[in-house]
Image: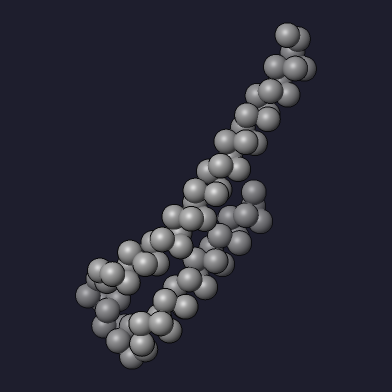
Length: 75
């Protein structure tokens, strides 16, 4: 194999690895919302008690989607 092929394979491997990592990251951020809601920390529970569970879930999912959008834009 010559240098160009080696470089192309290396770049393709990095791109593929980063793409898989982005998929993992997006899924993890949305599952974190459910984890936080199942066992909230006391300060979060106190701050979120003024709204119902479904409203809190929607707000957290929106925040997770905005974080994902920022990361994907950088990608």
